[in-house]
Image (cartoon, rainbow, N blue to C red):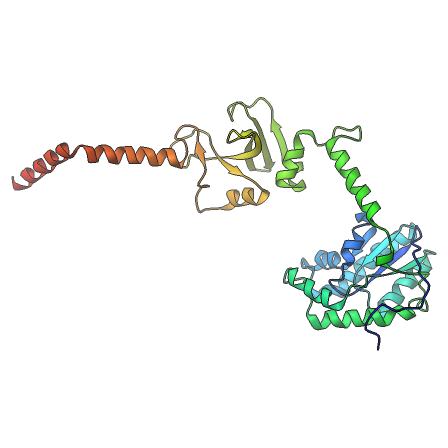
Length: 335
């Protein structure tokens, strides 16, 4: 029984037509999704995503049948429009591949078997880096790898128009071009407005925050620094963009919070935030404020500690006065 893709005698094929149905074939952890990402995301149908759509868990194997049904509905709609489509799943079972080939034939779309021939040991090792809901047991991975190896000689007979190995296909250029185009749009290098003042917001907090963000122009709240807010319904987070953090010229954001030292103080207080995780923790935490929170009136923790220290030191220095109070107290008790 073959255990490797090496040593084949079939002619090298590197043809991927457009349009085409591209069926990725490989065990879990072989790197199929990495290859799939070299195509535009609209062209990729990933089985795990459809599992998540129908069950909220990408690794829920009990949802596979429902996920496949939904995925096939989308696939047929794309094939009817003659759109290139990539199927990102293991596809190591013959009946699965035959069904996909038949669907493509029904719409006159060429088919490509795209083999990702990563060693089984590497596929197994990669499961350790996956979240528990997506990690595949070693036995299953090795079975999928063996099925993919066994499938290779018969893929032409199954009806595939082209059988290609990932290692022979140049896909870095389209990936880099899309990444470059996206970056140029963000920076405004394509002649558009770009993200402008939102570029740093996106870099710090992620793209999901951008639709919720607006700048408060000319706000005096942060002592002249630019102020923005993240707002959704009644929820609101106000932030200041600092352009000279610690006098080092660094950029960063501070979140508006309550005074960490006096509940009755209504002066602005700020705590540093470095990621969307910091925002989430600040918005949901009931464990108190960030240790570096600074009130515009009371200052930071060091300032308050110093006040307490000065107060205590003053009492310690007044030993004679304290002795007098103790004597008065003792006399009052005697009376």
